Amino acid sequence: MSEGIFNDYGSYLRSFFPDFKVQKLSVNVGLTCPNRDGSKGRGGCTYCLNSSFSPRYVGKGGVTQQLEAGKCFFGEKYPNMKYLAYFQSYTNTYSSLEHLVALYEEALATPDIVGLVVATRPDCVEPDVLDYLAEVSRRKFVAIEFGVESTLDTTLERVHRGHTFKEAEAAIRATADRGIMVGAHLIIGLPGEGLLDFETHIDRLSKLPITTLKLHQLQILKGTIMAHQYLEHPEEFGLFTPEEYVEVICQLLRRLPRRIYVDRFVSQSPPELLIAPKWGWKNYQFVHLVERRMLENGWQQGDLLI
Ligand code: SF4
Image (tube, rainbow, N blue to C red):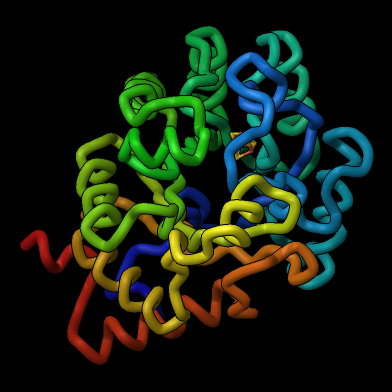
């Protein structure tokens, strides 16, 4: 139903793979993160609890084993499905070129894997890794997803990201210049930010050569630095009700150019890890509400730009 209202990730994948369904399969290859191992920082980003964003089938065994487990998980329902290996957890360009090539090539050699999606930090993409991925992108689907999270350096500093927005801009341009598709990830609702700031994020990212945008609401997870901050000063966190978040997302979509595909709007962490907000909604339920609100008001992605 989203077609016409906004450009979703499904239509993005269909434009590359018109003949079969494609699903991202997460793999955790045990790479760490410079914001955790001491080269940038030790505690990580204040909101980060990495175990919260790996599906259940992930993390056991090597790349092939994890991808095969993921294929079993989805393949029962969709026997003709093909897959993108999604290097999701931590910083998936943070290793030597030799090691990274071995991991990526193992994924590409797995039957039914039709491409790579690599999630990383903007300050962690060396030119040799980009050159290699550019070469792969001439034979396979390749996208790099950058955790931008905010375009305000004050916020990036406050949440201990350990990089600036300028670094994100440079990484996005260096990647797109090589012909590799770029995704950007934003967290909506970081402390100190409001609707005008979220709109600034969208406007700034819209000027960059990104193809996809992934949004999610701020979640306070147990065991994070932010969990302590939240419990001490909940008044500093303007967490949304679902209705408020639907409205924010609609307004952001309205200023997002049509050339950018929207990957998702919400993230759903395991309930046992989540402190707040406890919505209990799945992405598809949220998408439905956004579509309805957009439709009822005659809104569309990018209509404010016309
Ligand atoms: S959110 Fe990403 S960059 Fe931040 S500490 Fe966690 S893994 Fe590292």
